[in-house]
Image 1 (cartoon, one colour):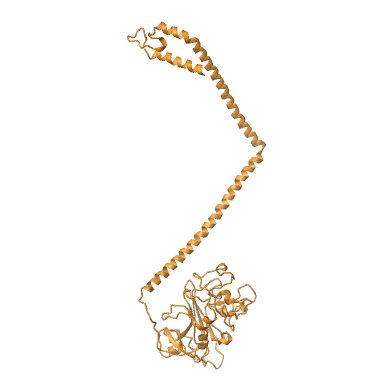
Image 2: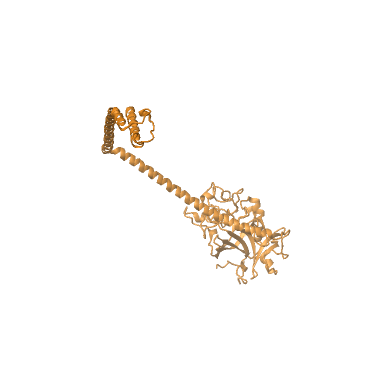
Length: 429
């Protein structure tokens, strides 16, 4: 190759001299060239030069031809090698199909695994979206509550509350004495040593309801022990906007004072704003020595159903009698008077007339939105919301409840029942 390069350089030089430069015998100005010495060559000189180097050039050309022939052979060999490799690959595929099947199966398994992963992640995304929607709803509710509280905070502060001046043995007695507005009144039942404050609902028909319990917004904790339930807790307000339990001792004194028995009315409101009620005739609460036992004569009516009579949940054939409430003593987490081997009040976090355990439970845990599940109730897994099973199922917690009493002869709007109550059985509706 070195000889070839030298020869090629010489030829190029020669071509340059013969084509680019004028002939020396005709040129007026001779440009000396190293190849020809100090004199410009004539045509004969060029011819002699070519004859001198011709044999070397021919040898170089022959060498180049051999190299080109060798390169051609190598190229043909490479092409043959490629063809051989392709044939070998085809033959290998024909002779070893299992290998490719295994590879294909492995790839398919990967694809299926990725697909399952994607589906799982999509489910997680849907769950997160549902959680986000629920949180957004809660946030909206909190914003509304914040606005309501903000409006209340803008009102002038009151150091005192208005307590009406008329007093009586119960709210119906107060209404009979001329009270026209609902609000806070002092009452003193027949056997009470002192008077105490109650909220009276007085309507346009002159009926006076003595309110025993209110659930409004979950602002008061009803998971209390025996003494708070005995004495009462929560807040009495003149605008009837607060939650409270009047107290078992006060309820007992109110319920046993008169020859005219009382009707207990239970008012319920769900989270859709629907209102229903249930009435119980001849309602009484026994004294503390009998653990404030609940008794009534019969279900007096209403559209909420008779949950105090128990409910057949379907867990057991004896569900209904084991969840009734009439004739049962009051239980709290620290005083177990139920008919269950465990402690219903402790499990459910409230005070109530527990059986095994309940079908109506108005002092239960406050669940916003209504619906709750076993995972929400903690370690025991039992329904512990504000329930009335003859209306909504036990996994629906009501929004608002009221317990209030009125003499049975004033239960109907507009006047008396027109019967001599106390000398015989009470009529059914």
